[in-house]
Length: 98
Image (cartoon, rainbow, N blue to C red; front, side):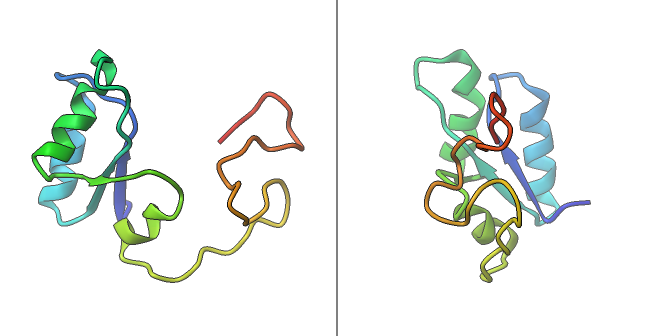
């Protein structure tokens, strides 16, 4: 259904690891957002990165690489700007973030 899968948090025995490996086997882009090395909830993402099943995701710019799309994504017409603060909180909806 999608051209890429991004794992944000996954324990060592997480079902998300299975999803990431299946996506990789299907030739889909797989990314992982690493967390603290001291966190059990980050063990899976670090494992995916170390076994080279997933690519490192550090921000919104990494998604185009995962999907193979080198074009700039269109800016949203409301909410966030397309500037470097894309990961910031949506000022039109206080208390909600991406």
